[in-house]
Length: 234
Image (tube, rainbow, N blue to C red; front, top):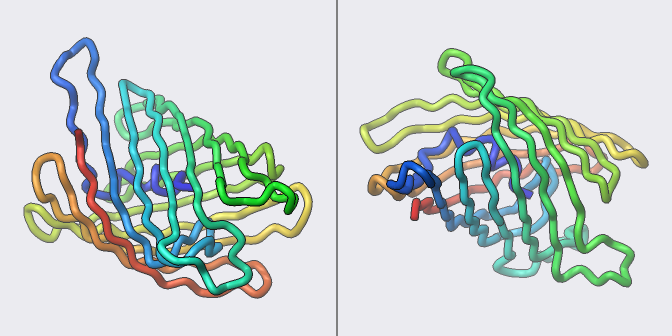
C-alpha cells in the first residue's frame, strides 16, 4: 500500500546509484523504514511496523516490492490486517521538462488473512497520475481503481522542500483524497507531513518524519505518528 510513497518519493533525498554502462543504465534503491503507526488513505492498519522496500528502475520503467510487518499485534479490534506485501510495476512518460504521466499496477498481498473469513488475501489495483513542478512546489494528481474491491480512489498531493544545510532539508507534504467504493459509503481523507532527510553519503540518506492523517468516515480517529528510515542505492 505504498503508492503514496512512490508519489512523494521525489520530496525526499533518496539515493540511487546508476550503473556505469551506458547501454544498461539502471538504479536499485533499498529502504529500511520504521513507522509508529501504519496509516493508509487516512485509515490505520497497524501499530508499530517495520516497512522495508526494494525498487529497480531502468529508463522510464520501475518495479518494486514493499512490505509492512507489525512489530507487535494491535490491541485495537478494528484492525484486521497484519503482515502485508505489495508488488508493483509502472512507467513514467515525460510530457515536458517539468511534468510526466505515471501509470502502473499494484498487487496487495495479506499472507496472514484467513480465507475462510471471506476477506481477500490479495487485491489488484491500477493507477494513473500526473506529477510535476510548479515554481518551488511538486504537485501530483492520481486516480486508482482496485479491481478486486471495486473501489475508486482519487488523490492530490503537494510538496515543498526547504534546504536547511548542505546535507539536510525539510520536506513538507499535504495530501487530500477521496475513496469511493462501488458498494458502500464514500469518504474523504487528508494528511500533512514533515520529513528531515539527511544525506549520509552520495548513496545513502537517513530521515526522520512526523505525520498526521485522518479520514471523514464515521468514527474515524486522528492519527499522529512518526517515521524513521535509511535509503540506500546499490
